[in-house]
Image (cartoon, rainbow, N blue to C red; front, side):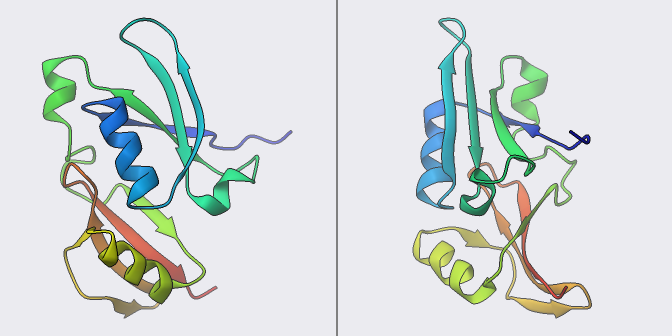
Length: 134
């Protein structure tokens, strides 16, 4: 099998809080939730379209356990957009996210690469919702 990016660690304050947000607000699918110790779990989520694809990247929800990790919540990329969520129907997902209470930092805009708008996750981390033009 060729190499592929399987998962990205995503710092969270609390597993259940983050799991509820990703599945409830964004409609992500819970792929795995395994207890590793009394304090640590292996929690993996993915967007609905990625859940069925063995080569799509997933998020590994990693509970912050140090002051430095806690300080990185909401700024996992130093204030820049770190995550780029592609969709095949921007209008559908934008409307669903707004109805679920997701905060968008801007109105949708058209760029050479597609339709995009920046939204915030539960910690204020910016994400791009993108319907690519290709």
